Length: 233
Image (cartoon, rainbow, N blue to C red; front, top):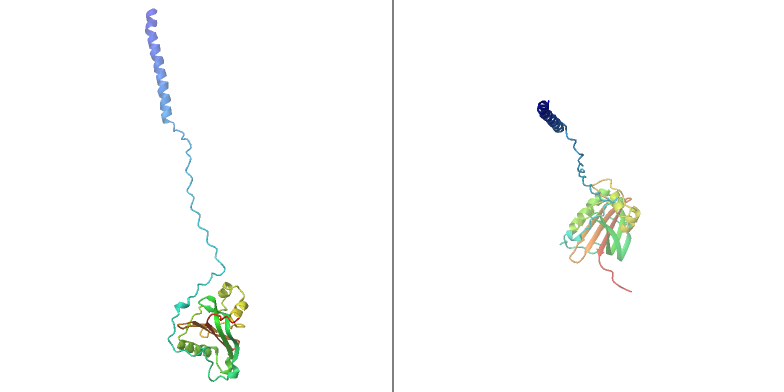
């Protein structure tokens, strides 16, 4: 009996150790085969797109570029006396009306797209087209040729009736006309007869602004010779 227990006891111990080892191996295999539950990884925040720059506020009408008289060449022509522009020789002098004859004043002219103030000696006349049996086109071409012969250059780039011009200069067209020295202006019906023209005649000593415009069948001729006011008081 003692010999049997001596023989059996080691077998039981060996079996017990084998069983423990088997369970340990099974646990390790199960741990290996089971998918590891990954810890949640914090995702990087998506790069936010740069905000688009705010569009600059657009004014109702952008300001006009400043006109530079130096862009007009100095005339080398022999010039007549002030006011430089004559009325047609066939016109009865009694039909010509003097509107302004001032040694010094300020008048606004259209230079480029700018309403520009000029100061100096001012002379303005008017007469009716029907006195000559002229159309606006005939008047335009007559004065265009005469002004070019003096060496003058046309400098207006916009008609004073255009909405953008009126808005840019305060929105009140009647106020603009008063500054320009005219009661009103006809709209452009024929592009070949613009109805308003601003010419600049430059001499070695001064600038001479020659305006030609038509209103209600009347031709207006205006001359402004730039000069400083002479103090008399």
